[in-house]
Each structure stands twice: as C-alpha cells, then as structure tokens.
Amino acid sequence: MHSCMADLQALLGREKETVEWLRNKTATIGNLHELYLSADNALLRFRKQFGMSVQLTWPVTHESGGGRILWLYVGGLIEWRKGVINASYFLCVAADVSGGSKKHVLRKYHFDYAAPVGTRNRPHPVFHLQYPGTLSSELAPELDDGHMDAYFEEPRVFCSPMSLALVMHMAFWEFPDECTDRVRKDGYWLNSILTRDQQCMWLPFHRKCVTLMNNRKILLDAAYGI
Image (cartoon, rainbow, N blue to C red; front, side, top):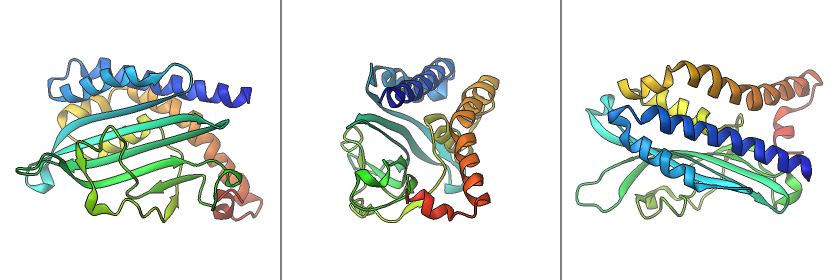
C-alpha cells in the first residue's frame, strides 16, 4: 500500500510539473492564450493527496482542411480508488458548428491504465487505447459526441503507457503550427519533461515487453494481465 501511494505521489508530481511548465511557457505566446488559461486553471484541479483531473485546450488552423479552425483538448484523470491507481488520458479534436451551442467532436481517443484482471469483470489490456471513450463531466456541456456511440467500449487496443506530456507532444506533431512548435522544440520540454516521462514510463515498460518475448511468453496474453 505504501509503495502504491508513493507511486501515485510521484506520478502526480510529474504531471503537476508538466502543467506548471506549460503554463509558464505559454504565458508569453499570444496565440496560445487559451492553452495558458487552461493550464493555469488545471493547476487548481490537482487534489492534494489523491489525484488530479485536468483539461488543456487550444485552437489550431488545420491547413489540410482548408484552413479550418479546430480545437484540441488534452487531459487526464488520476484517481486512488480502492487501493489501486487509475489513470486515463485523452486527446479530443472538435470543431465549431454554425448555430450550435456545442463543438462537434471529430476524433476522441483515451489512453488508459486499467487495474489488473482480478479487480474487474472481464479482461482487457492493462495499458490500452480506446475509441471514442466517454467525455468527462467538465467537457460534456461544451462538446457534442452523441454521434460517436461512446457507450460501445470495445475494442481496447494494447499500447504503451502515456502521460500528459507524451499525449501533448503527439498532438503538437499531428497538428503543428508556429506557436506550438515553440513548445515542442523547447530544450527543457525535450530534455527534461519528455525525457523524464520516457525514463519513468516507457523504458521499464518496453524492457518488460522485451523480457517477456525473450522468455517466449505471449506478449498480448501478458498485456491482458493473464
């Protein structure tokens, strides 16, 4: 139990550092004012001991879509529930609708950590990608995803563990512009924030994957917690 709580506090500390750095970095980038405001607000959402619930958002001009303005949402939920860490991150892409009160969701992905098989009814990968996943209660009043059949939860696709910074970096690559490039190419972002998360999350994960395969284990079976 003590080890799990220490892991939770370390994870929360890394994510808070990520949000603080993004808040400070985007404070001086005029076209990322929405990202600055959402990062500033997100810092208030870190619960002191047991978790976090944050959403970061910013607009981008989608050049291949004829210059259409899209809204990106990246966020995460970390909870301590029944002695287990539950962590979920998401990337959502939405667009304004003429005459509509809500933005129309175009894509929505969840990157989840699910507790091992003993704590749930049916097996699925401990680390998995899910499409589309459900909206958070904070975003439901702002976004319309009724066309996406969010109730349908399968398949859950085995993937590497993610963090807030790793999902943000992927979004910066997929939807680039001059302003987010200043974040993506920043030395501290690359050498401290992203390198830290790779070392803490991806390195041990992929080492375990290699060990399992070297021992002639079926990696997908292991991914399902079997």
